[in-house]
Amino acid sequence: MNLLQNLSFYIVLLLLPIITSSQVLGFNGNSKNTAQNAITWGTNATSLRGQNGQRATYTCPGGGSFGRVWGTDVYTDDSSICTAAVHAGRINAQAGGAVTIEIRAGQSQYNGSTRYGVTSANYGAWQGSYIFVSGQSPPPPLDIVTINWDANATSLRGQNGRRFTYACTGNGRIGRVWGTDVYTDDSSICTAALHAGLISAQSGGKITIEIRAGQSQYTGTTRYGVTSANYGAWQGSYVFLGGSQPPPPPPGIVTINWATNVTGLRGQIGKRVTYRCPGNGSLASIWGTDVYTDDSSVCTAAVHAGLISPQSGGAVTLEMRAGQSQYGATTRNGVSSTGYGAWHGSYVFIR
View (cartoon, rainbow, N blue to C red):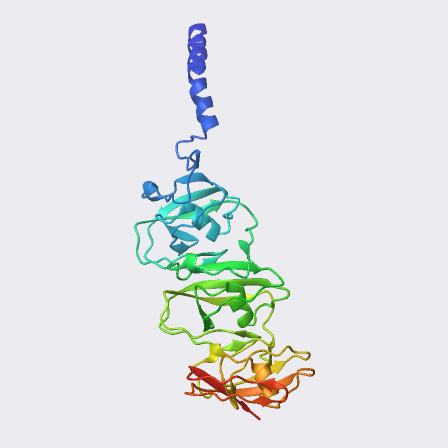
């Protein structure tokens, strides 16, 4: 008995390091856990395809650049793990963080969606998948980037369907805009948001855009004191999906300043627009009499036409006309208009 006891004691001593190591490392003969790995925002899970049920923990670095993702909750295994983690609300792009995925079998269909600033794509049958089983909680907020009124979306061209949220600063300076509802991607984002009735120049605000393909034609209009221009074919576009405040009711009258003209409406012959000129206006240049060049100051031409005064201002309605071969000069109501030859566009006042 003593010999057997001694042998048993030595066997236990020999096995103890193995048992202890197995317990420490978490091996139980059927473990799903693997060591934590630092990855990049381009890393996917294709190397684990077929290891269904296997779990892996990864650390995504902060300041990430989004990659491609297919699916929602269940992702194709060639989807960027870190980008899918943002889409799933587990981490955010600025801070990064640790996430754990579990490998799943391939699916017959993957449905795309937009979450947390990431748009995943639809896809049909694929050989392998993964899901997230841990991560930060609660989900992080949408990434919001503060921009100035010069910023446009040309750097996002081609990322069709992706959505981006921006905060426009207050006291903005109006920039160039082409289009209505669908804008060229080189249009000032904040100015287009003002044109769309989503923010004001004084207070700014938060807006979300979605990148779209280029259009064959962009139509200009005047809204909320902003005149957007017409344009032909362009390579990229964007639309707005919402704003930080509900759009104000469509005004029948748009307030403008004394430098405003209507070159942005050129070619929209027959279109009528009503403007309100503020009081204490400063006269500007005009060309023509009764029929004015479209680059003439609207408010100054309205004084020349006897419809308002510089002191009190007032509302006037104009109608767009085709360009003329000649514009005559006259002096009326304290305003001298200049003569001019052929010009591309005109307007008249509707009394």
